Image 1 (cartoon, helix red, strand yellow):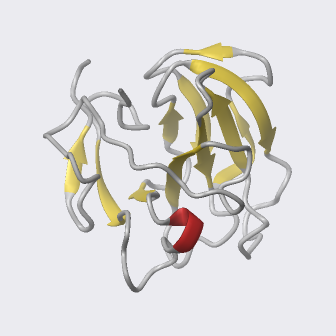
Image 2 (cartoon, rainbow, N blue to C red):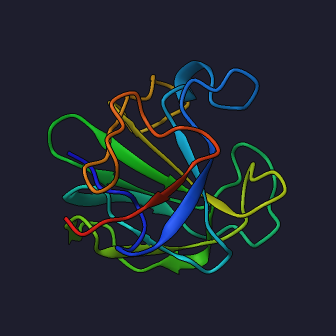
Length: 161
């Protein structure tokens, strides 16, 4: 149902997978994925939907769980995807714009709770706030089979879909 949130042909490492016991992907964030992507990388839509809300006003270096730049895409079926840790003014889409899988939507940055390396945090949830409702398990159709989610510390290549 989903595609990896980066351009076809690129490969990125999962630095924190879902249900990771010692990281931040616990509680409501347990089915989230962090994909290491250099600062300034292109983030793509993982599934068709409408851009419902975004914040891209936080300057680089903003730190803390609630200081990230992010975009959310509403899939129209009660699920919303969040793309987090974007650069200031890094949206490539507008609120209300329809997106399709693989379309560039944002640029990675270093805002929020990013630790020591730039990455994009991706999750899907049934409400507009991934800290208020539990994220949903996702699989990606344009890479090797991943029925339990992407595996931490593995490199994944985005294949044509």
